[in-house]
Length: 527
Ligand SMILES: Nc1ncnc2c1ncn2[C@@H]1O[C@H](COP(=O)(O)OP(=O)(O)OP(=O)(O)O)[C@@H](O)[C@H]1O
Ligand SMILES: [Mg+2]
Ligand SMILES: [Zn+2]
Image (cartoon, rainbow, N blue to C red):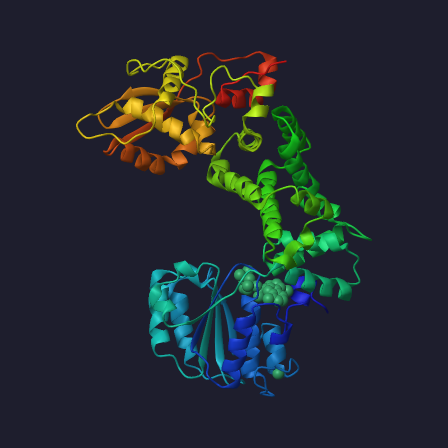
């Protein structure tokens, strides 16, 4: 009977059937043919890229009764037993469930026996990083003086968890993620053999989202063909997997290019209304923009099957620098995004910040009327002269006004002997930061100085908790830069400021996201 799942049915049985991993194939074939085998191999790499498969082909090559070097016959009883995992001489051990010292002791006992039929006894230990320290120590003794007839193949997705003493006794092979176009090639082979009908775009999409894992790609293919009969399109794939169709990303770039704040917010609102998972959208957008960027730079041309024609023509409207900037903004917020409870607002905020840097100031002034100069303005407007240092006050708006006044100060290093107050240095630091127009700047725009001690500044953050998350993420860097300006080590303490008044009316509630953004930009909607 044929195995049910594609990945078992089509598991490569000889080196030639293995896709990609060329250097590994070549080195192993050479070693087998020249009888220059190591006693222990370590196969590392992500899931489903051929580690176990290769270990078995290696075992078959060594024990095939026909003894044809690196070309096992797959017909003799040794080959057949290995394929069916029934060989007495090839033992596959799951390191995750046999992680203790006792199991390794058993293994050491076992090793002493000569092979029953074949020339070698081959021990394949999967997930080897799961072994306990004692088990590793016991294993080490065996690795130091292995019997001639024994070969170990350790496989792991997490090589950094394998002790150096073990690593140094293994020949290591790093299995790579498999490029999307190679995955597509293999899927096409399976599709032909199974008589399936898939659009080229559908194949490209499955190959892309598998993210280098062949087994994953095969299981998606299998899932989709049980889910739907007849011709399968890219849209079927997106529906089945709940992923966002590409046109939703193309649309994003379009509004970003030509739209206003309102259009961008409405566009995003529409996306999330449609029920797409926010994280799916965020990470999908990152992958999409990366693909576009690589395309624009002419890198990895083979992997662009996944970009539809609409995406390719939109790409022409974006300078690679622009794409790189968008990518950078979204990537920078990744950690914050993962933790944030306000993921949609976060996406909205990043998008608006991109709009501002893109369209410079013009558009920002049309729709949102900042009561004061936005901090993202690259040419700060001068106001009244500096007054006294705010300290201890929690009155947000007043503090922000103070911050505003600081804009006239150029950031300069503090001269020894003439110490300026930390708060005034902080204000000018903010101005300097605002030139960078980063996501961090946006978050800091809603900050207010609370208190100043000799070497500590307490800064309140208004708006949502995610503003604080963003700032905390870059805090070390901020402290380092600010300490440089202040000429001494300064600690920055950030805390959330309570909103002065909770706005409870229903209309407000509906538009929380817009409100929050306006909060950050210190703006209001003009109707
Ligand atoms: N390089 C490859 N060429 C062809 N098929 C592959 C390759 N890698 C993986 N596959 C497919 O994926 C299935 C699983 O591969 P395999 O068990 O070798 O992965 P693995 O790297 O050991 O993964 P894991 O870390 O999850 O154990 C294979 O049966 C095969 O169908
Ligand atoms: Mg495996
Ligand atoms: Zn054989």
